[in-house]
Image (cartoon, each protein chain N blue to C red):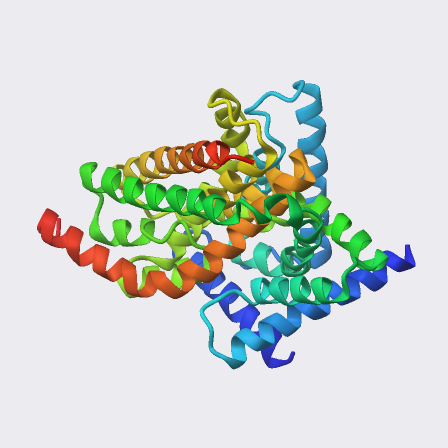
Length: 113
Length: 267
């Protein structure tokens, strides 16, 4: 348990460092992605994955569906939409997302291993 | 709060401000704090998972969709504006940052498996993003969506804060863009597995790329549920898109925009 907490501390710290860097360089990139790159480099440099980081990572990734719920509930934020626009948005989003997903998956599947 | 945390809060604040501006319901007699938001979100999620199991894992009995529906339903019923709930749920939402960083672990673990085919996989990712964007804009144009709505739809393939900023520059509604990005993620999360199964895409890495390309962090969540390798690849696709598109889209999209504006006569 304590190992997981230690790992959590590092993941949170790296995430904040990423946010700091993004802010400092006024980069349009999310700080957490910069943090991801930083951890990636650190792990490659270390040549191994420290157990606390591994445990904390497993915990957070398992919790991902829960963590996106607050953002997901943002669906309700837009209420002032004309009916025509709503239909256009729904159709555009539904078809484009499914098509994009299928094409990406199919092309990626065709890449020889 | 230090500047770094403030900046993260600023983008979230932008989402909230947009939500508050658009929300018809401004009942401020109902006050919700973080324990309440935590209980609501956790409770909704647990209930949703129970229902999912009861419905024997039916596609539409999707835990994420159900949890979101439950949260929204309760907020509407009690009369709490979304912005207030989102602010109160910040502890949970904030963990998405460290969770994104955490994706480095599966990436490192599965690095060897993809090193040889990294470029083609990223090209597949790019193909998905380009198609999704072009198709979304095309469909919206054909269905005669208002220009501001089209501007809001355009950056749906990038992660929320970046998408909102691009929408702003194109003359769209950032609040609407935030919702569109969320819906995109949910569509990928709910329908992705069945679509990929039907298309015969079985390779975990390919599935991961597909999820991450189009459904951002929700795609990663779904991919991680399938396998660690899929999660790693989804994280890779998401991070790649966040980096490349955040840098390219502000310049590319206005170009695409004026091109489409010329073609459709700014309709």
